[in-house]
Length: 363
Image (tube, rainbow, N blue to C red; front, side):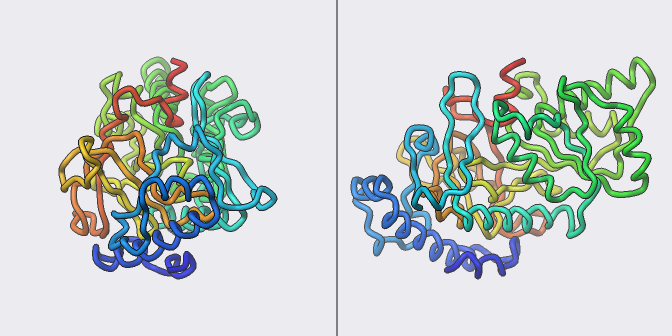
């Protein structure tokens, strides 16, 4: 099934059987495409004894460990067709994933990102506060996945302001002026989880307690992501994160998301019930540590992610280094169909790699 056909599908309305047919068809096509175009991928499939006629469901499609993109240059297009090379986050000394994009794959990433995020924010662009500093998208020595996240979500902003200066200090006066200028309007706030906590929340608490200054963000919607490792060590859960922010600036519309540079575009948004959701463009499987067989609902396992997008590199079926649990399918109280799940954290001894976690490692 072509990506153009899938783009016409409603993103959270198809039930398990309908979605499975679409994903199985598309992911089988991608597996064959990469087998024919990427010699290293074809070699791995031969080692696994892959038989495309034996695929009854997308659960049968082989997965690659996400770490492989740190060790191999995997691409399914000629070098002249590569228009962009994405790299993952990493602390000093860590190797990073390299993801090679051609024009079509990059364009489809953007189209699908727009569909998923617009489902939450609406069709119109909103005044936007970016909880980061301007240099992050200018300085190539900074984490490229962080800059890519900002650029990706900036599509949904009309007028934009950075909440922090290049010294990571909150620009309080500029924020107050921005909020006054857009009073009564819905505001979009984007940032990586630890940066919002460290540089927005903690500074708002300090301003409130020391100077009596408060910002009213009750009309704002916040999207954040990038890992919880540092906040977990500070005993800050997702619920506590939302509660504290509401207390200090009255914001209540807060949504986490799960995603990675290896499958850019196919993010998993958190609904109003606090669950992460797989759209029509992606899916998640949890696999047992003992034999890699699929887990049942409510059973903890290693997360496998699947995406209909990647045509320029074999990244359509990846085994991550994260643990999670699928809570159910087609029956979330929010009304969205598809699988809904929670992330439990990194597998023990796995490298720090999320934008928030790699930045937080400096603290």
